[in-house]
Length: 181
Image (cartoon, rainbow, N blue to C red; front, side, top):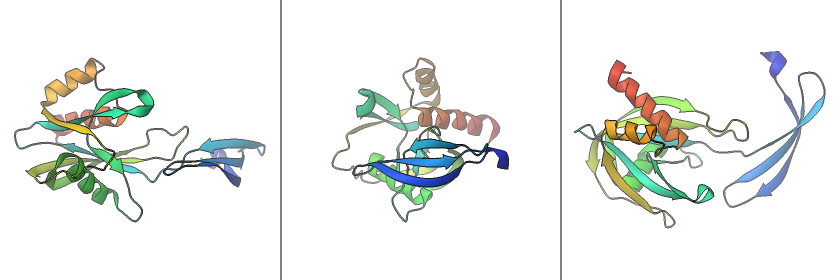
């Protein structure tokens, strides 16, 4: 695998916003030539697949500005500095849905956009839910709802659930149900 590794020679900040930044690195390629890599560093995120005692999935609808569309998703959010992914999962579940879970199980880690970012998302299954109070961010507007697993899979099949992290969460939950993962 060493023959595939690229070595960073220098890095320049191309853009810095309030959250996102873009870097342009000059790299030495495995063949000794030089190349350029542009990417967006990301602190990572956590997503939660919340399941009620009745077996319903807790999901939300949220408008996503870059795509100009309302998406159906599982609760998720970025990892804050100094925070572990599990703490992010717990915080986001309560902030976005008002729920607290007794049990969390790490299902998988995904890297959704490897061509232009180092973002990773830890996906957790959350059970033993109890109601608390939602604490949405000032610029966050969500519609939280419960849906059966079967209905969620139908929405995904119809293309009404197209958010990749949510789709992967649903597929992993199928394995939990079928194989006890």
